[in-house]
Length: 92
Image (tube, rainbow, N blue to C red; front, side, top):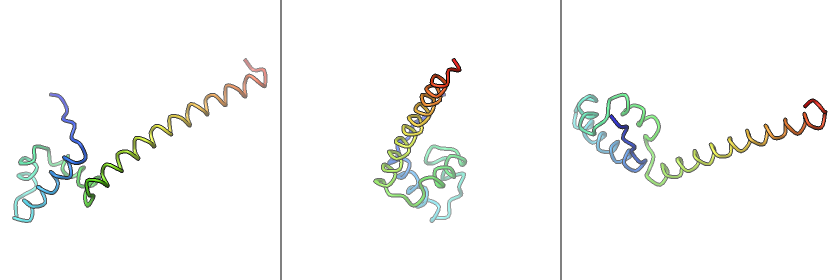
């Protein structure tokens, strides 16, 4: 079965829907089934997106992408630096 890729906006909307149902006294198992995810996914989403607004979630995802890009860039530059140091020392 293919993994569903929910956008942050969809996740926040599903969490809002779940909170409304929980306030009515519905169980977590029933709520998670109603929004179409497992209870584990519900708790993971709540941990990551709980209390966020849609624009905050978009900003969070953009920052995570930028952070991953910068980490890769630093790793590449560190590798290049190490190679250049070895070449200068004559250990090739």
